[in-house]
Length: 111
Image 1 (cartoon, rainbow, N blue to C red):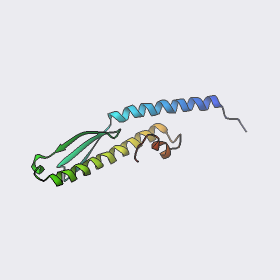
Image 2 (cartoon, rainbow, N blue to C red):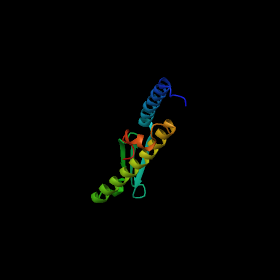
Image 3 (tube, rainbow, N blue to C red):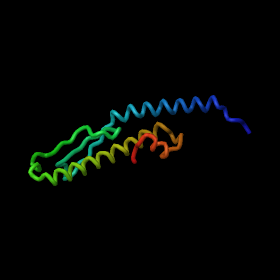
Image 4 (tube, one colour):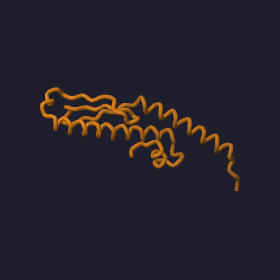
């Protein structure tokens, strides 16, 4: 039985860490759009789950409660899409290493 080469293991961990840093940078560039009310409200978020913009059709501005509900729905839809995109990017970069889905929790993705 061969003994594990700890230098190789450390090198692999360093490479994985570098890949994860690259993915974190890529997530800043990814955007996802969610909409509600048939597109009357649109929210754009980054792959890091930050709201970038909200667009509201002026025709619905007279119904504040509806606007509020639609904004919440659009933001939640966009955040869900961004989390899915982030999971895909992290999974590609990890290549199944370092614990898969459990690893994503360390990056606060999809929680």
